[in-house]
Length: 227
Image (cartoon, rainbow, N blue to C red; front, side, top):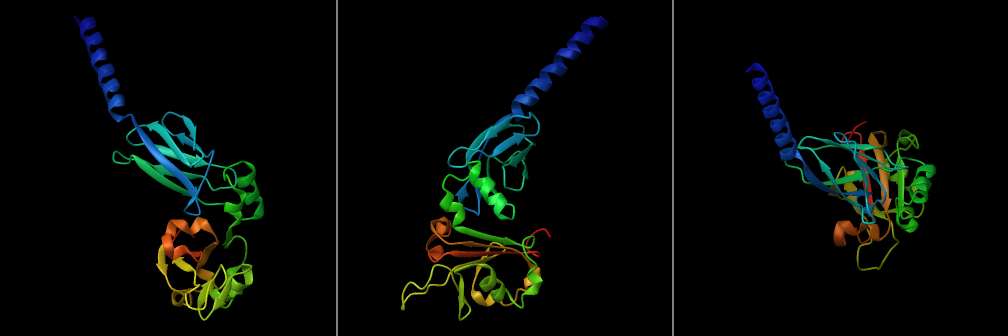
């Protein structure tokens, strides 16, 4: 009697575990980019619970099976590794990996094929607080003029792709901590508070629509992100 009860209990426990695992297993779809819009190829996506590893395709897309509350680890040569926590509701994830500072990281990203077109990454100029001491500049406009070749500051506007015409504006779109703004907002940001600056010069700015036609200046401050 006791033996029969024991096996009956084990059977129920095994059934519950099996049912629970089946209920939680699901497919999560995602996309991996850098600089907001450039797809990354061959990024490794590792599932914490199963240790399964998949890679992103030529469009930066991936699909992976995981549990209801799981974690994904994304890594690629030249980029900072990023962890993504999942919950019951998440079925789609968009991850923007940040390129490590320095020319070596850029060459690694291109050399390992994470960026399909060399020109895409070369069209993005990046500078972080790890590359240079921002506090040596009196204001952010001096910083931009001194560190980004070809970028001009004209009457408080940032000119990335040159002057297009006399009648239309050639000013670049300015995005500070993810929020589009104008040149006047830059004057209130002390260089010492800047974490990174990215300049997007070409079609990679298309994600911003017509506003990004003249290029995009992306500023991330220490107040807007981790120090």
